[in-house]
Image (cartoon, rainbow, N blue to C red):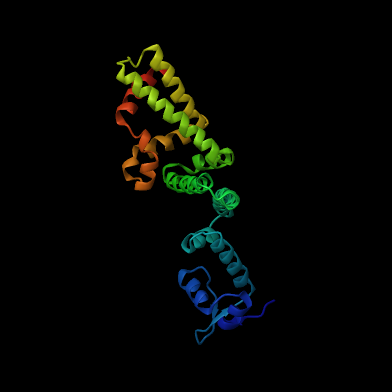
Length: 246
C-alpha cells in the first residue's frame, strides 16, 4: 500500500491517460511527490484524490471548481453535490418525458404524437433558459414541484393564460376601469395562475418577475413561444388592476 508509482504505471493503475495526470498536476488538482531528478511519483493518497476528481468530473463539475471543493470544508462539497443531484434528476425527468413522447410517436406516427415531442423539447429549452433568473433556493423549490409539471399540465396552463389575455383585452376594448368588479375578477384569475406556478414562494415569484423583465434578451425561439403573452398594454392594465388585489 506504501508503494510509489511512476506516472505511466499510475496512469494504468488509475485508468487515466498520462496527459490527464499532467493536466491535473498543472491545475493543482493532483500534486505527486518528485524524485531528485524531477520525476513524478504517485502513492495511494494520490489515487484516492484522483478517484474523487474523476467522480466529480463525471458529475459535470468543472475542474477548477473541483480543486476548490476538495481543498475546502466538506460541507461545501455536500451542497455542491446536492445541487448537482437536483440537476441530474431534472435531466432524467426531461429524458423520461422525451422517451415517453417518442414511444407514443413510434406507436401512432401521427401529427399529434410528433407535436408532443416538439412540446417536450420546447419545455426543456425554456426551463434551461429560466435557470439563469432563479436563485438556488428557488430552483430547488421548482425542482421539487416540477415532477407534477407534465406537458398536459403545461397545455392546460397555456390555455388558461390565453383565455385570460383574451378576456383582459376585451375588457380593455370595452373601456372597463381596472378597479371595476369585472376587471377585479380577471385580476383574481391572474393572481391564481401566477400562484399556480410559484406555489406562493417569494423566491420563485422574484425569479419569474426577473425573467419576464429580461424578455428582450431571450432566444428568438423562446420569445416566439411566449409572444402571445408579451403585450405591454395588457401587463400595464393588469398591474393597475392588481393593486386592488393586495
